[in-house]
Image (cartoon, rainbow, N blue to C red):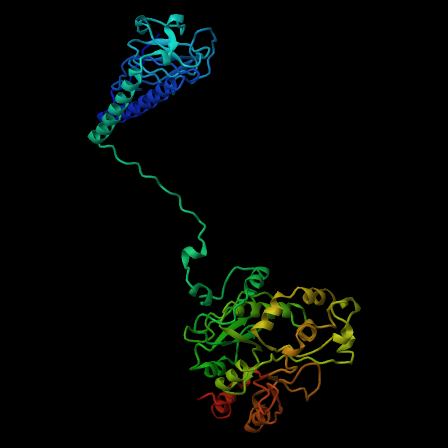
Length: 505
């Protein structure tokens, strides 16, 4: 048998170990004492000898061949005597709680459990020499047969040990242990901003990483209570579908001037185009995440839906107008704003064209969702209210049909929206567009105007020769925008704009 030697511990470590020993000793006293008082606990045995706190657990415990070596002055407790025994013999100890001081090194092998309520009394000679764990039968007795004063003594001893441990903790000034919490990457929305402003404040930037599917889902949220709990100023969303630059943007800058808070701007251009608008421009950072668009392809409708979805993220946007880089306004902002915001209808051109370029593009596979009598055609440049804008981006019924069966010479951007609204919401559209174009020159595309076309007579013809219904009442204002104007028209347009369009007001 060998005695293990260790470096003398510091006072701080001795105090800490003494406190631990006191707590364990008190625990064992209560467990064994209380168990005996109520009739015993299987395998609970007690050695009524003095506990030694000074040397408690100060030496390392080793386990060799299933045999525990317990150095001298070691405090034995249930935490030490729970190893499954290698040797089993009658009248030996297993799973017992032994509290006491062993004056010399001993080797203990633990065998069978003691009977219920047994009390292990270590004979005087057990503290000397080697002990193989065998316990004489006369050293086992029932705790319940002992003097009840023993239990009282244990309680008093326990209280004293607790007081002693607190005193030693204070004396050696043990520093509290700081528990470090790992930060979580999950930040619920109410942890960031829990008031109403989170829902009504538009995104600080238009760029995001949402897919179209995620974007359309997010944009489709609709408040069911129509009465707003805050002061809401309706805005008009101007959505520009372009290939790249906006050559007429100086005219639009003048149009928007002085009307901040009543409009929003969204630009869908080719992904590889990077605009260089200055920070004071109304078009600065108004580009949305875009994808490649092929004219005449369904990707045009995808871009239109993408523009609508991004604009719907701003709850203040009430009207949504689709424009191109060749569009110009033909009235001042206030006139256009009032005309759209006060309209009970959305402006979507929709008509039944019996010619090959109309019904001739219909495919029988469109049924039963769309039959040939519901097939409609209309200009691409629409204006819709918020309800119909949501209907467009949330639609999967008609979009899936058009995506599969409307291919050239069927052009989805000319048929999809007019047909869907004719079937679903015929009473909500005015069946006309607010964007003027000139088809008088013939061909498959409207006329494009250059610098030489711009004069006073030409502009008056656009604005004065109009007759239509607005909210079911006769109106002399029918078109609010016009196209197609080439970049060369910018200079003369800026010259005529103040007087003809009221852009200086």
